[in-house]
Amino acid sequence: MTQEKWGQLRSKLLKAVGKNNFTTWIEPLEFQELQDGVAVFSVPTNFMGNYVSQNFADLILYELNTAGADVQRLAFRTAANSTARPAPATDEPQPFAQPAPAVETSNAALEDLQAAPLDARFTFDSFVVGKPNELAHAAARRVSEGGPVTFNPLVLYGGVGLGKTHLMHAIAWELKTKHPELNVLYLSAEQFMYRFVQALRERRMMDFKHLFRSVDVLMVDDVQFIAGKDSTQEEFFHTFNALVDQNKQIIISADRAPGEIKDLEDRVKSRLQCGLVVDLHPTDYELRLGILQNKVQQYSSTYPDLTIADGVLEFLAHRISTNVRVLEGALTRLFAFASLVGREIDMELTQDCLADVLRMSERKITVEEIQRKVSEYYNIRLSDIIGPKRLRSYARPRQVAMYLCKQLTSRSLPEIGRRFGGRDHTTVMHGVKRIEELKLTDGQIAEDVEMLRRSLEA
Image 1: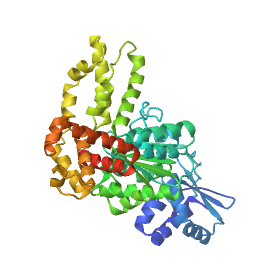
Image 2 (image 1 turned 60 degrees about the vertical axis):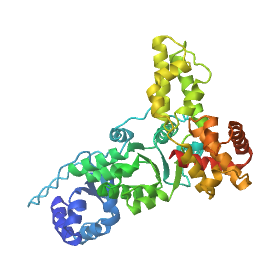
Image 3 (image 1 turned 45 degrees about the vertical axis):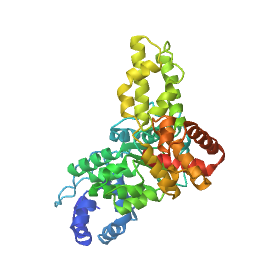
Image 4 (image 1 turned 180 degrees about the vertical axis):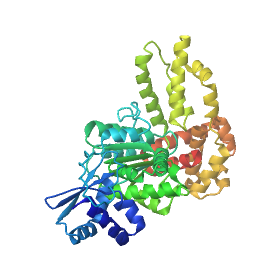
């Protein structure tokens, strides 16, 4: 078997497979040697070698044996940066090229692909677990152990500042520590799109496909950013399928459930929904307080002389309820300001230092909005919530509405009482206390209050 014969066979293969398939898959093959019945070819990537082996090996073997070569099987070697092409056919046999050293996709190559490094602060040890995020944390912990899992992909979704990226980084750190042999690739959807466009522009799609299909764990953050970008979605879809077929783990995050992402193709939504989809709920007061306490412990080494007065953390946890990043930023500002002026962190300093943050975080929910939501939720008339009737079917929703007014607005008890048909503030106080007690013993009341709170804060 000579280069001349291989050159002649290529023209037959062109007719057999067509111009597009030939240009993409056959033309890049470079014949190296024939030894012990094995024909060795050099290919640009392992992915190309695997594809040719699966789809065109039988045809190539048939043509080689028809031409008189005794070939039992084909072998493919990945050449490093090979751009050479077979020498043109001449009357003289051409010398065989020496096989180029094989290269494998390494962790270093994958690190080059990852544009943003992992944040050392985002580990499982620094993640504060509470009821709103306990399922997401448990699922992330399970995936970080490595090995086969019953859910693939794992999709984490939730609003801004609820811990999605923290959990993604924590999974990556844990896998890299416990299983350094695994190729773990974490990147944002924007970086995936950028790499895809770059590969198209530089005509290196085979390298792109091979690189993404050779990872053991693929983690894509903020996948909603590929919505509406058809070509990127198509490539993501094929990458997703290829990895799942190889039992490789995929972890995705988004700002909403896959089915609710506008302009995301149905087939991509379907693939994302076939695994475990976990919602990170908005933080509750207890979780926000736990996050603040955890941050204070971290700051104690940096600011050993600073003290924080009682009630400050509770005040912040109540007032800044929408975004954990804003909450942590407020505490960072407090510690920095107090260290500069040499004062204790008390309520006066807190309100002076964080006046703008507190003003932006002021709850805009009104008593009237709460009354309307509660009446709709319990399917009763608004007039019955405000009115004098003391039937249980009206009294309990009324107490729930009073409780939510106390928690979600800055209105005083007498003001709330006036909005509920001119009731005394002691009546409001009793209603609030009653709901607080029932939340601990009655699961249905606790669920009703939580559902209404989320609906009002959405």
